Length: 131
Image (cartoon, one colour):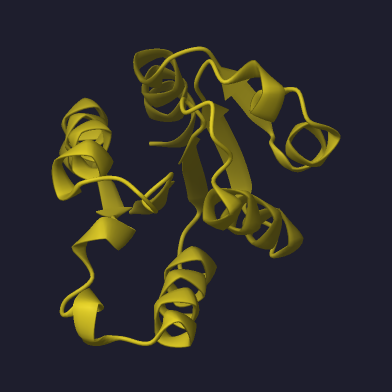
């Protein structure tokens, strides 16, 4: 089964703000995919920053695809790190969102496989090509 890791902004967001698009992504991808959601880390509030990053890297290494949300105008350093780490580890990186100052940045353009303006289009592409 193809595994998809959901990268996206979490710092400075409420649990609802960081989870809403991820819940929608899981519904769009359906049961044909195994989805790893870093916002669901057990006891994250008790983990060190290093432990959280190590956990995210572990999940990315065990994924086939990274689906990265780039819909916030404020830069998410963590998401950019996940995109670069995923690509450097041979993962397919699909980005989506309308934050042009981020999506148009050379580091994002060079590490993303494809970019879509919205989550539905990105999920449809994954479903159509990587089931």
